[in-house]
Image (cartoon, rainbow, N blue to C red):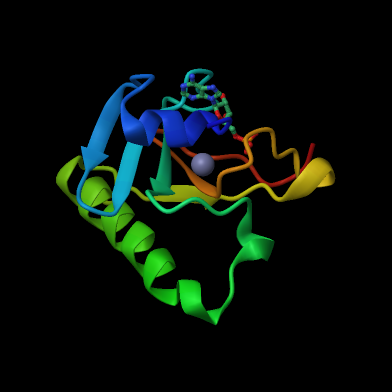
Length: 113
Ligand code: AMP
Ligand code: ZN
């Protein structure tokens, strides 16, 4: 198995988990880009958001619902947070298992490089 995040799911490598249920894993990003920076993934491997089809609707809802539960129970949702998904080379994607960055704990700047 080549995928880093699939190794997190199988337990072969242990990330700093912040959330887990049957279908979703959330963990701290190793190079935080905000005071709080987490990654949320579905336990079912897909490469990136452009590999999703209508059959993955439930998978997406599960991830977003996990983010909602996590941010509500960790006081991130009061002041808000940002979700980012990078797709492909120009998007800056480096790990090819669909993932959602959750950034918060401070006000985010505007977009741009
Ligand atoms: P992206 O660049 O959007 O594909 O996001 C991949 C993210 O994975 C980056 O923000 C990395 O900092 C993060 N990352 C890479 N290796 C690890 C790791 N071992 N544990 C936690 N996060 C990681
Ligand atoms: Zn994977």
